View 1 (tube, rainbow, N blue to C red):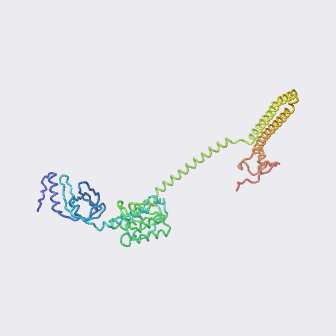
View 2 (tube, one colour):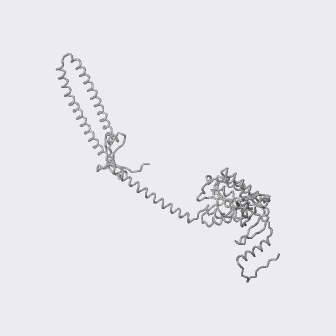
View 3 (cartoon, rainbow, N blue to C red):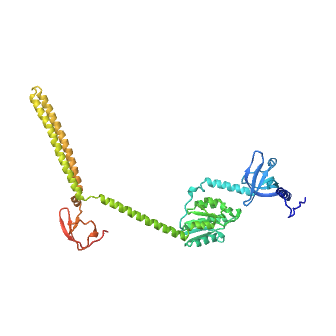
Length: 448
């Protein structure tokens, strides 16, 4: 059937244009075979199946009518790679087209995806992708390692970025093919070579962009395990920003491109200078605040210090006060007991002779109790007095001298507390525990 094309000068309605497109597509693509991956699968109660067929760059809407679904050799599922046989249909009211599926079979690539998903699940269960095992990158590494092809664009991108940083660097290149059958083993060997070398503080592993097949080697289990086992932090830089591989999940940090990985590794010189200046400012402010704080504490402590002579005078007053209180207490105790003794004696004289022995016994008991009370009281007061005398002796300059120290006074009788106030030739007086003598300063030196 021939389809007449509208003349360029014809004015069509929207419906007319959609119908023309429908006729053109449905006759031109009566039956087609398309390879792709199933996505956005929906199975409503009507029994029809709706999904999208994608290939990484494009997508087309597809439908399997309920009657055709039972005749298919395989049932659709998300992520499945298939080859579809069908026809193009245009829904004129909305100007949309879709693929009516008549037949569907598994594509070999789907098995590879299934294996990749199983490997991902296994490695995830083993904890190789856990965020807790990720390590921080060194801020300013002296030596950087890179695993990539010596002839690839990724290496040149990394070198260009590092050169632009205007900071010295040492780059160790471990060559490995980044695609092909031998690539996986070469990448693992290159990683092990850098780890055995011991000099790199961080390693970049990756390549430039490419197709899914080109990047497939970075889903290899051997490389993933080598990266997870590395004691050196690793940055993955595989493909472009939209690409993600198992190596990206296992690495300590993922960079969208090799250039971005180089930027992560090496800071710019201006940034380093800014951080150095900021650190210097923080250090100056910190020391200034610390100095002010200690000066304030020194002033407070100095204000609370009391001269030993004043402490001795205070303790003397305290001893005199306690001694007077002790004497008064003792006198009052005797004065209280004297009337009682007189009263007892008077009663003893007046009592009949038959009660005299009993009263004498009570008198003796009272005298004994009085003696015990007075003895305990005097002992307690003596202990308090001894404690006060010991405290007084502890703050006495003589006690300090007894421990082998000496007091040094200048010729004006001022106590010398620092070597800064003494100079050679000065005459000083040195006080010891049992003597004092004059001396001439020969030399002033700091203690070693």
